[in-house]
Structure formats: structure tokens, C-alpha cells
Amino acid sequence: MTTKQLTEQIKKKKSFLCIGLDVDLNKIPKHLLKEEDPIFAFNKAIIDATHHLCVAYKPNTAFYEAYGLKGWKALEKTIMYLNVKHPEMFTIADAKRGDIGNTSRMYAKAFFEDLAFDSVTVAPYMGKDSVEPFLEFQDKHTILLALTSNDGAFDFQTKTIEGKEVYKQVLETSKTWRNSENLMYVVGATKAEYLTDIRKIIPEAFLLVPGVGAQGGSLKEVCKFGMTSNVGLLVNSSRGIIYASNGSDFAQAAAKKAEAMQNDMARELK
Image (tube, rainbow, N blue to C red; front, side, top):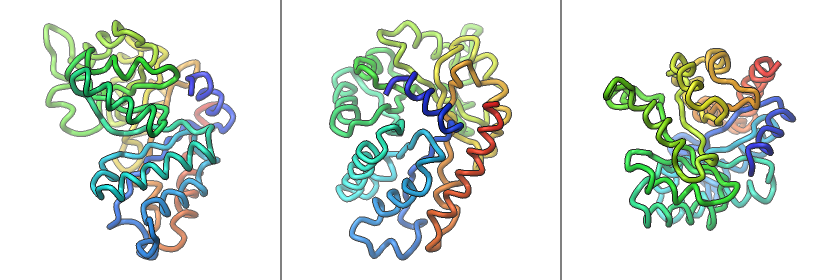
């Protein structure tokens, strides 16, 4: 999917909501545990109830890898269901990969070719030769961790080296990499006050913004400082939507939460 197609979906749905499919078998409704594939059954119900309210889905691969082969199969079935039933959806493999070039090439092949995700999250710590293999794929996007929403972000990302914060150095350096037009960036909603400086460096790039809702980030602040002429935002909510209820009405409850966020986003887009 191109960024132009993504922007068109945002404008059509009046939403830049990304729903995180972080499935924990200890949290899903108990009746689903009787299903042959509880993880996929949960995801399918959430997707069926919310697809008209969001533009992206983001399975965090750790929540599938934790269940071994069955979990990976559920991930495969989920992305196949999205690609067949809702090809207009932007899909994100939240895998946070990053390794030496040959290994990164295989990670990229796994997520872009085998599973056919539109994008994958990648850690920048090992530099350009660990990221550029992901950037080689046409109409696929590499979402680079820039300034994350967790407390540990202050351990390294905001530290100053030679007069400049590390996250700014990551942003500036990444622009020099081959096929850098395929880059998007993770910027946590809990760091909204940093967005003004971030937009000076990457004025039009799409940002994946976690941390609105359960982590306390403000949608209004994110839009005020981060929105661009082509919107340029994908705001993610995971737990706040998919675990809105653990009863038989879980999908309907998730849809209500998603609709509330979509309504807020529609107002911001005006």
C-alpha cells in the first residue's frame, strides 16, 4: 500500500485509528477458549466489528510467538483474513526487528513476502545496513523506532550526545539511507511535546503513535503538534479497545470504544 492510498482511506473513513491486536489468552473471553483457534476467533470478531472505524491493524508478534506454532498460525490466518476480506486496511507487523544485513533481509522477506504485511516495525540501533534491507521492498514501509512511549525511552533516546538528542540523530541519519522515502516512525503519544521538533526534521513522514488511552497520551496534543497536510498520523490503541469487555459482547464493546476514538479523530480532521 502506498502512503497516497493510506491517506485516501483516512479521508474516506475520517479516521486515522490503528487497532493493536495484542492477544493474550488470559484476557480474552473465556468462551473463546473452546474454539479450535481462540486467537484467530478473537481477532476475526474484533476485525468484523471495527473495520469500518479504523484504517490499520497492528498485531504485536510477541503475543503470537509466545504460543509457539499455534500462535504463528493464528497470526498467519489473521493477516490472510485482512488481506482477502479487507485489502484496504494498512497492516503493521509490530515485530521490532533489527539485525545484521543478511538476517534483516530474511526478516523482511518473512513479513513482506510470506505474510504480506504492508509494514514492519524496526529498531535502528544497528544502523543503516540493518534497516536498508527492509527498505528495498516497493510499496512496503519500515516503521523505525524513534521516540517511544515507555519510561525507559529516557535511558537513551532523549540523552544528548555532542549537543543533540539521540532520537534527533536517529531521525536525521535515517533520511540519508537508501529508499528512505519508505520510512515511517514510531513516536509515543506520551512524548507529544517533542513533536514540534520532530516535525522540523521529518515534516511529512507518517508517524505511528502508540500511548493514547491506556498509557495516558492525549489525542488532541498529538494532532496539534504532529498532524501534517496529508494527516501523517496513525494513532494506535490496543488494550483500550480490544479488552473493553471480556464477556460475550466483547466485539460490540470494542466497536463502541473504536467509534468514540473515530468520532474524536473526525473532529480533529475538520
